[in-house]
Length: 313
Image (tube, rainbow, N blue to C red; front, top):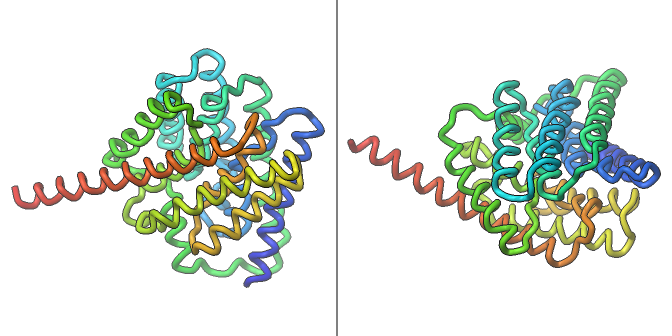
């Protein structure tokens, strides 16, 4: 079992390295889509998981969100309107398609947060996610034995990755997202798209999300992943080696913390496409993650009070 997992993680690192190499050779930086690391790690280590089973969504939904985000980045300045429209459009897309592909949120936000205006952006996302979906199908067809049955932890991960239902989670999520959109630019902080994916999975599935009860572990995973990714780029520059090492470092971090939080792996790959990723990037991750945890605590407290008042009324 450990050998299978190690092989799957090595395959995810190889795919990320290939994307980084393609970005360097072609000059299309966005081929190194940070969420590719999160997606590849999850679908290869959990071949029966929610994302691995939804190959059509895996190929197409992030690209559709990327197209929306590209259009908004091209026509609107960085600010709350662009952030709100990007989030709202992607959440609507996920809801209408009943798609589990929450990393599409990051695909839609990335051009808004980083001012990506190249028309290659949505096409590059479509290319890498289609290749990933093809790799999942090929690997399944070559598998000689049936995948092991899902264990309880994997079933919890599947519940966390399900499409959101209802609307009661939205106020808390919007509290986090909109105030982050207001204060991050004002404080010269980077909007970190993978954290909006973490927030979605926390707010939409508060009863089952495995990291909701371990806020300090989540904060440590995100900040350490950001530091590891920034250090890899500082020492080795952007490219296949630093991308693969950033992903593997993130894997070791979340494993040491006993967390399965794929978006944290994407945070470690963000320095591959940032103009510069130093202490300001790490501080942005730390402060926005802390605000996420605070907003989740406030929303949970409000929900408990409303529930108590409803029972006593």
